[in-house]
Amino acid sequence: MKSLYIVLNLKRKLLCIVFSCLEIFSIKSSFIHRFYTKWIGQIFRDEYTLANVTSDDAVLHIGCGSLPTISILAAKNAGAKIIAIDNDLRTVHRAQRYVRQQKLSDFITVEYGDGRNYQTGMFDLIFIALNVTPIDAVFCHLAATSKRSVRIVCRDFGNGVFRMLKTDEFSNIFMIKSILKHSMNNSFLIIRLNHFFRQ
Image 1 (spheres, rainbow, N blue to C red):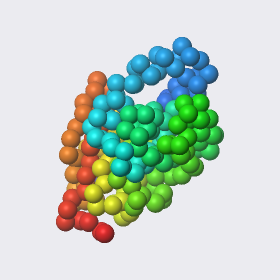
Image 2: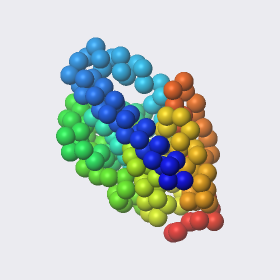
Image 3: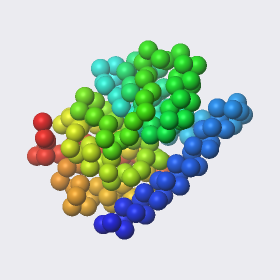
Image 4: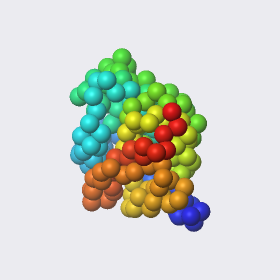
């Protein structure tokens, strides 16, 4: 099990570096921004649909990055209120500027925070970015603190998260309700199992 988590988190750490660079370049170049958003935009739109976001949902976006795209979709299309967090302070400042530029500060609050210890009990919907790591620690925290009716949308490169959620540590807590398959990654809609509610 530990080897599974090591490989899974190493992949996600590498992706974090790649996507951080792409987002920084996207902020500085309109050409790269158009390319990046066209390339990854459909994935975000599909995840937004998968999550069935409504204006009544309290939404948490873990690992929002410099361009909190899924938060922006949820704010623009559903009028949802979102807390977007990242554990890199420079990234948080870039995301705050970007949200202000999009004139969405009334809907999206960007904060410094870590998915391993951020309080999740008030949120109806949680988006977990592809680059969030260590993902096993984040799900351990969600198991202890998330509300019983929570919906979690988590993206993965390959099947590492799928395999992780099937381990003894998580299989009695979370269930994958739906899977979206794209050419390079999968997105999972995850719910809590009824017999493990802590609230």
